[in-house]
View 1 (cartoon, one colour):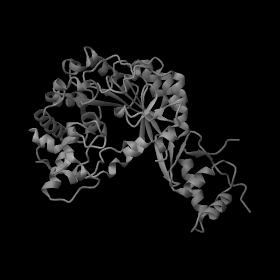
View 2: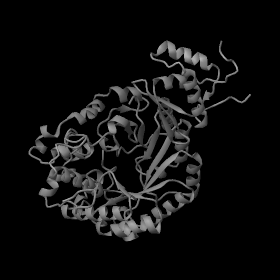
View 3: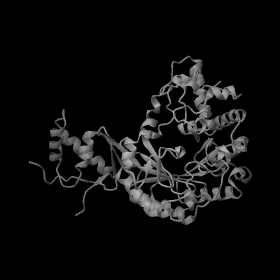
View 4: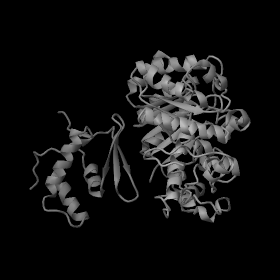
Length: 369
Length: 95
């Protein structure tokens, strides 16, 4: 692409919560300083000139910025659409009305990890469940497209059926998505109490795949146990059927981000992705967006990642799943191995099985073990 | 002789043209979120939607710059313009 299709913008490094698995705090994106409204206005004008289509506003917590609505106005003034990632605890009627009036909001994603305060607040802080649910109510009342992300961890893995019922039946949301706490930010310090063991991960895959069937497409995932369950079932089926390969597999193809998006830290540093905050490509206001996008060697290198065959990597040697694997997320690979041009051990099926994990039960149409 | 009574619409200034390296492009309406792909000839027509020119002039330019242009290219241009207006991507100046 000649220009990024969308840009993730961390408009603040501040947050009113300290979730135990927050990927932001203690990461390279935790820069401790925010830019002025004026600086963001100039940047959104640059995005408009570059024909970028949308931004995702995140943080930190975007709603703690007192000038968030002015930031959104600057986004809209430059022919952009926007999404917001939020913990949902600071949403007001006035703010929701203002956002709805723009007509440009693609989604507001709120994190809800439980069907009750006990489960949700365990890692997000006391009182956060009630506020997040109220945030969902306010946004929906204003007709805004609310999505909910459930982060699966050790304390909620067995509550997933109740969470699905709460979100889809009690709150009546059209859908929600799941992931799991990854080895980034604060989660690295709290991994033992948060990250799923192979046994729990196996259980989570079965529970979520059952729920996804039961709720007929209303539960989705790009990462975490549900995504792993689907991908790994497909890989196992391909192996059992003796297929040579699957389309787009056998190389480090797990991330298409560098071809279509870019991210900006709260201090204005261009980075390939919010989760690769250490890879600074330049700074807004100092470096031209399109020059960074088209010529920066680190971005070029990340784009060439898809041409690296897994069979040439020491980590993958002898793995029967190599022809069917994507190597998964480069940011996770970096956090676990110190390199982006490696597969992510966290998403390695062979390693998962060696550590006692098991594939999901076979299901019609999705293969299995 | 160009038909001076045939009006050319004006591209909606709120609509974004995203040009790619291969001369293809996307027109994106941020108010609706809709996006449409344009081939290089579509991009030429889109850039001509200034409310001033004529279909014949656009067709002439296409014939100058492209090969294998069909005889009825003017009809194609009119269809393109009608679609752009219908989708809110272009409109006519109100006098």
